[in-house]
Amino acid sequence: MQLQFLITSEQRASGAMFMESLNDTVLAFIYPTDGRRTFHTFFCPPMRIIALGADGQVVFDEVITKWRWVKLPVCRYVIETGPKVDYRPYLQTVLSVAPDLPQLGSMDPSLRMDSLLFALLAEAVADIRRIRDAHRGEVRPEIQRHRFEAWERGQIVSSAGFLLDFSRAWNLPDGAVKLSYSVLKAEEPYLDEIVAASVAGIPWRHEFPNHCMRCGKSASWRPILNPTPNAPVEILWRYQRPENAIPICHHCTETLNLLRDESLQLDLVWGLWGPRFEAFWAWHRARKNNRLPRDWDMYAHPLWPWEFGGESWESGSGALRFAEPRPPHQVIRDEQHMQALRRGLYSKKFRGRQPGETPLQKLLDFRLDILQGEPR
Ligand SMILES: [Zn+2]
View 1 (tube, helix red, strand yellow):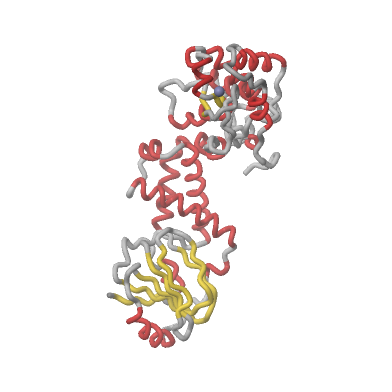
View 2 (cartoon, helix red, strand yellow; view 1 turned 180 degrees about the vertical axis):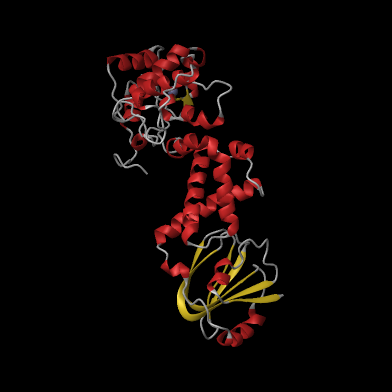
């Protein structure tokens, strides 16, 4: 067993970070005064944290296995050690030696940081940790491209950018800074698409209603248009958008012979999403024919170029502030769209009770609470 004192703010800041395991090491954090302290366990192995008052009274004693922020009560000394290590034999040494140690760096950096910044940093560090776990060393683009969804990659590069900005003002662990650089470098060719995906390509199925638009029974959202086989993984998220999907149950899929009837599929998705499907379809076609506008600004219009949709969400805009997935509530439908819906829904007779338009109406009325015009 090995007892180490961490006295300067620099020593205390790195603590057990990047240690594979604490084994039987006992780290003693010595502060000149009592105070509430926030510890983090990012980049640290599982550990036991013990906080002590000036007289040696234990005020906190917990084993922390996950990476997180740990708020400690008012204390003078903090001990970090392996989860199973008995620190008590060292307690007397810590208490007797501490007052004689030089008192340096009495400023505790964590106390000056705002809690929102804490939360952002925690999130960013957690993202970078996933990179470290996935790559084990050097960041390889092919692993990045196949291990993570495009929207996750977008969030990871945002976190990397945030950490690099942050590292100008604060001492961050070297590993985190290096990883941030190499992630940005590896993702450079795909930045536009994955940053667009980080807002517009996030999963939505678990939040949306999943009643069959024809009969109301439980259903799943089925995508309609498919990407070309050679499409790069970075653009696939657009085909997963709700505007390219309809909720339909197995039974209705069979009854309508939907899988073999392409025009019926198009009627249903077009009728349900109106101008929003039209805009998606315009993107799909332009991409297939290599005719996407050269000046498409994906940061302002992540979904599709501005000329493919209207000015508002309801009329098919692909602008950033309308990019978060939403159910088809308030889509603007004209007579053509209504006809397409009717063609799809009533082309075959219902067996038993005729459910009428109730399930569809329920779906169309469903809304998520989305703040109008507030980009995230
Ligand atoms: Zn159904």
